[in-house]
Amino acid sequence: MKLEPVPGRWSPPASILLVLVTTLLSACGLSIPTDPDGTLDAVRRDGVLRVGASPSPGWVEVGDDDPTGREPELVEDFAHHLGASVEWTVAGEEHLVEMLEKGELDLVVGGLTDQNPWTAEAAPTRPYTEERTADGTKAHVMLVPMGENAFQSELERWLDGAAS
Image (cartoon, rainbow, N blue to C red; front, side, top):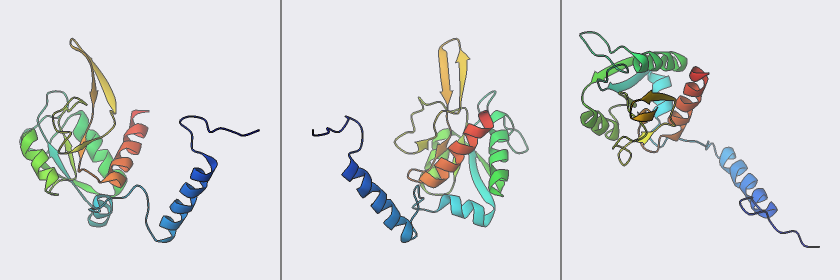
């Protein structure tokens, strides 16, 4: 009797190959997920999380001091989790996304939803909360630099824990 692989499942030889490749990469000092630009390591090493905040009523309030509101509170707690303080930059979304692309920021907040126009320039986190509005349900995200997967994974795991 010949066994057929279940569609959508890894075949035994492919599974063995995956384990071997992962083991070899680990032995070489590579970890998955990784940050090509080292965002997570830099935040932990330097003790500074560089965050862009765009004003958004109920989510990010700006005034003379550091931003306040739901998202700045989450960001401050996440920075504390990393052993870092927050360095805030307040500006419009477009300018903040440009700074994120240039590596001048580590994170952008501003009441952004999973329908934001910046997904070609920045990586949105998984939705971490939903808001019911007259227009329907909005799933909120934060933006991180493209490809900084270890940083994004750490943030998403932390947001998952903060939401529970």
